[in-house]
Image (cartoon, rainbow, N blue to C red; front, top):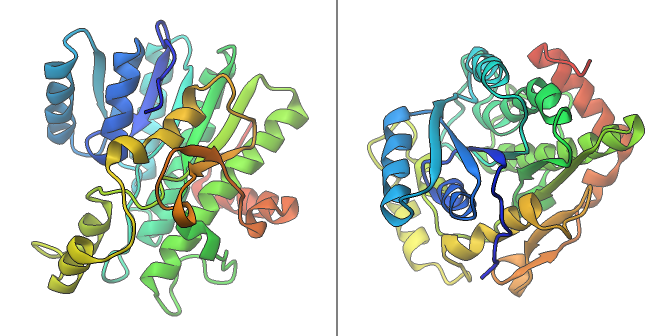
Length: 305
């Protein structure tokens, strides 16, 4: 198990902290002494997760705040309130996401749900929190990608999948976009001399509710075939305690690198202890990364000063 270094005195925001890797990250960061803002869409679920963590760690410093990454007004409101309330922010962990909904949904702002929630929302949040992060020596932004990014392509001519929706391809595009965002932020920080570290991670194949929750959108429960596949498929998988460790390493290790990418070291990058892992070639194209960043600025109306 990765031993999170002492985080006393640090303020860390974790999106999607009510379940899965987000809840596990919030628990272990708080146990290491951090003050953790649990940024969640549904406050009641966030409060239930907070209470569960407090039962195990009574001294944990946890605050639940609402954010809906599928609503840019909600993202702006969250960033404005946090900036007004706090003098600095040590770590932003972009963890929340949605995966393979059964049909094409859109965000409040009209974006395809996976591209909007997984990429554009975190992009807008990151940029709007940059002033707070840049006031903090040694601040970090750690973004959760996915092994699916290896299969992703950025369809600049149809980013919102209006011509033909393919849910797995749309998910892969959104997670590749997350990795490209992390890399472009790292480049901006280097070029501008910011004391900010930007890196990314992926959880391999980790047992969470992400797969089934996405597949159940618009229905009471996931389709039977999805439930059977999740339960009985032979693909190696791991529990959330291990699956969260690449993200925790990226966000807290003194050895974590700028522009680096971390994931499981075992079979096909699906399971195992954390290691520095290779990025898909498409994520390393600086011109394409800059182009995607520019498009995201235009779509969200949020720009780096």
